[in-house]
Amino acid sequence: MEIVVRWSSPLPAEARFLRLLDDVEHGRFEAYRQDADKRRFLTGRVLAKMVAAERLGVPAEAVKFDATCEDCGKPHGRPRIPGQDLTLSISHSGELIGVAATPSVPVGLDVETATRRTDDGLIEYALSPAETAHLTGLTAEEKAAAFFVYWTRKEAVMKATGRGLRIPLKSITFSRYDEPARLAAAEDPALDPARTRLVDLKAADGYRAAIAVLTTDELSVTEEHWVP
Image 1 (tube, rainbow, N blue to C red):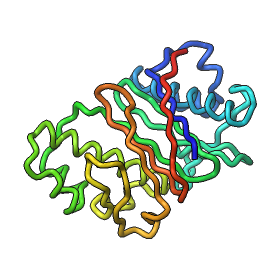
Image 2 (cartoon, helix red, strand yellow; image 1 turned 45 degrees about the vertical axis):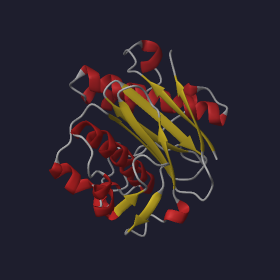
Image 3 (cartoon, rainbow, N blue to C red; image 1 turned 180 degrees about the vertical axis):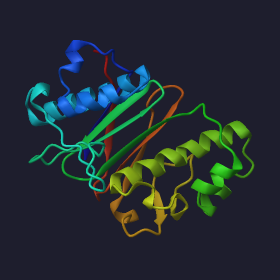
Image 4 (tube, one colour; image 1 turned 90 degrees about the vertical axis):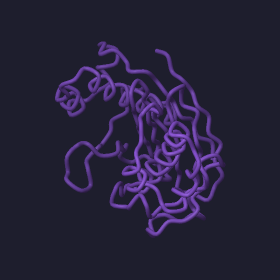
């Protein structure tokens, strides 16, 4: 399965980008108090609509999302295009926003700044015993880098399932942080190692990222950095 992940820095709130938002999306954009949050939201929607438009062969202006949350009914769920077999995942951290799209199979994309620190409490909360053992003997800097490899993998698979933190992080075990990404074991029936594919991504300097797809197909992932 060939997948393109498109990355972008936050876009300016210019008319050429704002016109791609519908009324509901404009409401969400205006509800953010911080300019940085507004720009990240705008960028995610613009990137997603451009990717969807290319896949569907229509203008970006014609792409309309339904982001109704299945749990609460509010418009903050995964964006979907009614009547189209296209699955999208948006992720952002710091100054980087990314979008991935797949043909009708669940996908999850996650990116995190790699400069964040970690501590034993966070490691105990997120990592399985096998993953924690992989950190033995690492320096503090190496441990933090390894931790966020695991963290982005876990976030990606949870986004792919659509269940989020309802799946305990410690119930998921991946291959070693310095080995190709692979789901080794999962206690939740929503995740089957035989039907889960992952790839660690390059993203950009200072970031960690991963993509997960619930499929038996092998993945071929290309990363693009978009400059408007």
